[in-house]
Length: 599
Image (cartoon, rainbow, N blue to C red; front, side, top):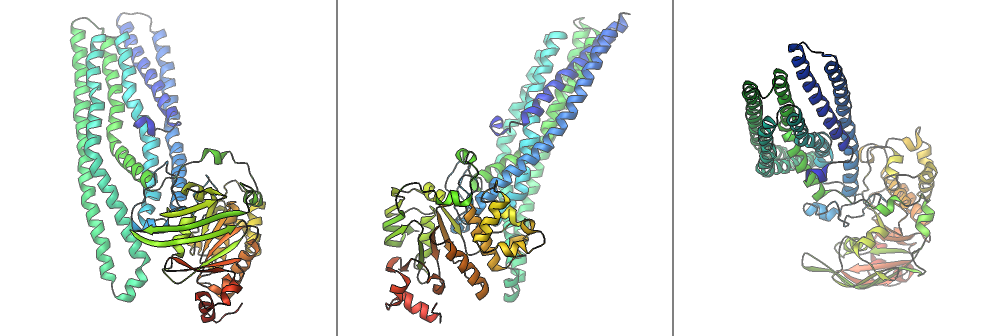
């Protein structure tokens, strides 16, 4: 299991530790030879030169080996945090809210909710990461990186370096001493495995409580305004205090176990190992089986046997914390890497978005589609043809099934009945996730630059590509007017941008992905009239070139759609052009008139 977790670069530090161990063993053996030569008035030059060279090699290897783990840790943090962020942004918001995600590192069921990620580069989505996931993406990633970069390599060296020492001890000093010490060394993996088994449950419980405490704190912090208005500050404070108290109890218990591991390590190996080595050396020296130099070498080599074991014992907690966090991470956040996507050539958004996979003019077809959630039928008998390049608006009262239909089209929910065809072929969730990208009502914006937020969709995108999609989203002039242009810091959750700018930035990001289908969930909700007009213009400019599905409550913004699907109680109430539906006496005409608009 440890070898499976070990990053390839960690082998560099392990190999350096092996060379250092051999060099130090050679140095100590050479010192023993120098002592024997001095006692016998023999030449010591050769042994001294050998010892000096071995010491220089050992120092050099130690210095290089010490520099490798910190750099590897930074690489691991960046890789794991990037993977987790892509998966968190690609989470189905409803699933994230209902419980822990079930995605694993090799799962392909991550949602696509608004990062605009290209296939294989980033799971498309913009749902806010769950509060428990925030702990994983910060402290959790740090512990995983520490475990993989700073524990695994030294741990492997700790298990294997003593074998090198004992081999050279048996060859150059005394095989009897080497065999007896080998028996003691073999107890190390047995004890480590024992403690791993005993600590796994408590460590996992501690990490779960830590995530819950973080989630509770963030939940109370975000709802602080509402708690104040309700006069419920004390209730919020109590809930945070209770979560912290439970975490503190578990932390103390875990600390006790960790100290027990250190105590056992010190008592068994520092006392028993070194005492046994000295006793064996005295016994063999008294019997005349080894020389005084051999005695010195055995005593010095005993420190090499204990050194890696000591490091292993003192970093045991790092291993437990890191392995536990890695398990939670892979269960909750990690998304798969797509090897094929890594080989995708650098294409412009227009090239990636307009190249059809088949000659059919129809991109999507729903035939008598039915969906169930929680044992209840949510959609029934929905039939819809979505031509390539069409703009389809989906409207209806709250609870009609609009969001459910959007989730099905994204590949987040399976159909219970009927059929969903993508380019004339039955589409599974993976195919839909590759084809669709969603711009949600509240897109997630990182506290980075405009360029960094856009490149979530296409990491290798050039500045020309970024300006192109910004222009198509009607945002280029506003970004160009800022002092730093693409390098403008957008702030946490896009705090330095207006609501309309955030929506258009998310649209630009979705365009950069080159997705065949753009799903826009309430694209103009909560915007003022000017921002709504700009977003509306941006979407109109995409019609015909991109296939659009618009989930809308503001029906006036759907007047330019090619077709409008009206859902009521999970069924198709009407389907037609906006003009046809306005001429009828159904929901669309009544709701549009109720808005006081006729655009």
